[in-house]
Image (cartoon, rainbow, N blue to C red; front, side):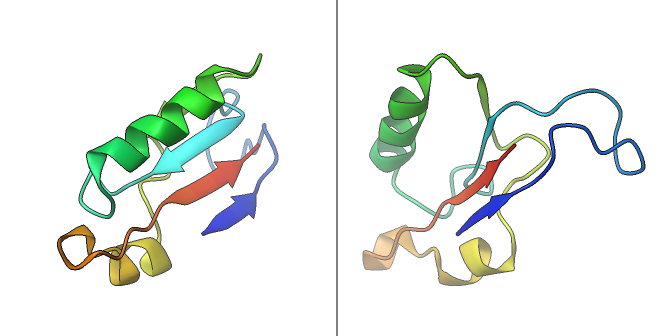
Length: 79
């Protein structure tokens, strides 16, 4: 589930968002290995990232992410 957002949205939060905002609802919507792979791919770029920060995974990620049943979901919010 991928979205984009401005880096600065003062009416919603102070400061600047990381460029990559990875949401796994605290690691419940995908296998840890998948999360680790996405984090590694983001870490290999010059841009910063956070996992399960301000964006922990929206409805789609939480609804469909069932790693125990082989269905993995991640939200990626790109600033």
